[in-house]
Amino acid sequence: MKVGFVGLGIMGGPMAKNLMQAGHELVLHNRTKGKADELTAEGGAEVAGSPREAAEGSAVVVTMLPGPPEVERVVAGEDGILEGIEEGSLILDMSTSSPTLAHELAEQASERGVGMLDAPVSGGDVGAIGGTLSIMVGGAEEDFERAKPLFDAMGATVTHVGPAGAGQLVKAANQIVVALVIEAVSEALVLGAKGRVAPEKVLDVLSGGLAGNKVMEVKREKFLSHEFEPGGKVEYHRKDLGIALAAGREYGAALPVTALVCEMFGALIAKGRGDWDHSALVTLLEEWAGREV
Amino acid sequence: MKVGFVGLGIMGGPMAKNLMQAGHELVLHNRTKGKADELTAEGGAEVAGSPREAAEGSAVVVTMLPGPPEVERVVAGEDGILEGIEEGSLILDMSTSSPTLAHELAEQASERGVGMLDAPVSGGDVGAIGGTLSIMVGGAEEDFERAKPLFDAMGATVTHVGPAGAGQLVKAANQIVVALVIEAVSEALVLGAKGRVAPEKVLDVLSGGLAGNKVMEVKREKFLSHEFEPGGKVEYHRKDLGIALAAGREYGAALPVTALVCEMFGALIAKGRGDWDHSALVTLLEEWAGREV
Image 1: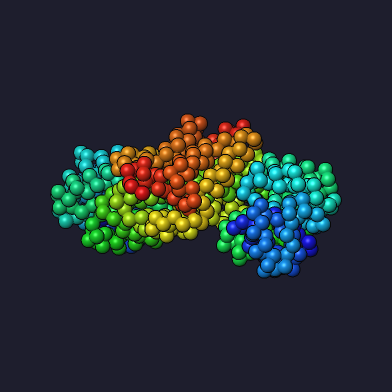
Image 2: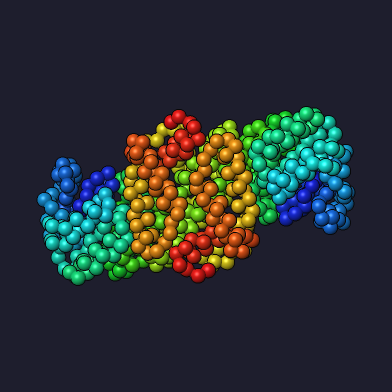
């Protein structure tokens, strides 16, 4: 199948490669052209000069972009996908973006006879490279069925969660839980440390019961060593919580702790830790408790 | 071994029974005398008229009480354990109580040549009945070794986490994580519901990744059915968070989200939901989002 692909960053690059390896003909576009050239050299894909060009003649166009402003520009802006795409084609936006924007763009696409799915992922660069991403998909059932073989080439768990916007909403829910669990574990560790209980003991005992969670397991070494190589970066997670809070305001859901933790991520960014792993949230609490970081 | 046991509530009753079944001679005391009589009828234990009497002649005295004020009164008050206990004996406070009080009482006990361990539990009434509790123990290593066979009769996972007070501190850390994870899942579900995504989908997708946690697994049916039979009660969990916050103030650890969630539990109690399961935290957010509960 001829597939346009826009956005060849840390995530998009390996995702495009997996589509090529599954036998699809790719037409690549990236804002900085070098990335597309690298992939083309390896696999023989074409390079397009704009999102519009990447869409022309493609049955499906995939986007993997930093956030809502880029998604809106690339899909609906000048020289954007909607200017080049043919009726009956499909757009898969796999960026983490806004549920309401996803809904709006799906309507605009629909007016031109084009299907659009919002299909954000979790699993990070490791999942993108290995083709083991979790993909949560919002949109029409028939479009989901058409896109399924492409999703299967990029991810291990692909779930259709509801209509347009629902994929982004579930991704927002995911980012809320991850952030708040990091905060939960951080408060527990700081209290323990101030009372001079070894953090290993806290993590060991809590793992066995109702307090058990995946963050404590995956981030254990970072919490213990205080080396915060990302993983998921503070700055991206703050962006994701911003999307969740905007969706909450739009839909009328108050999210008090999400708002607080979003501000705490903001404080970390102000301290120059935006590119640290999100588990570095614990360092803010440690400073509040008088520990030098 | 002759074991005094003070506090025969939902937790203490079955814990005392497990000690009796392990072959120990129990001397039981409860503020309302009926409870001790019931257990005596079954197993042939003695009944004591006061904590002091329960301690007289016992090698070990176990307490399982509602909270810090009761622990202080029963151990160090008039007709309390320290008035009756013999030198060389051991006190095991298995209540969820204050780390600083645990430390103070251990010092008072030590002045009389008596060992004292703080050994709070998790696992609820199910764990108490089945003898499968998790027990987190603070105090001297040699006292821990002496008490270990008794703990093993009541629990499945017994961990020595540090000096006097450390057991209570780890329990406080546990209660922080459980409460904040309930809040995390609740915010995710409310955002999802307002965006009309089925809560089952949110829980299913989030379970597979970094957002995965035990609360989502154990409380799944309560979140879906909105039947909040306890389980862990809102009022007890607020008490536990109050202990955590007091310890934080004492040790100099700021716990911003614990403070917020503690107030939210307080709001639930004001609404008459103190005896609902703690996962009913979600109902408060639902009301804030305009849903009738």
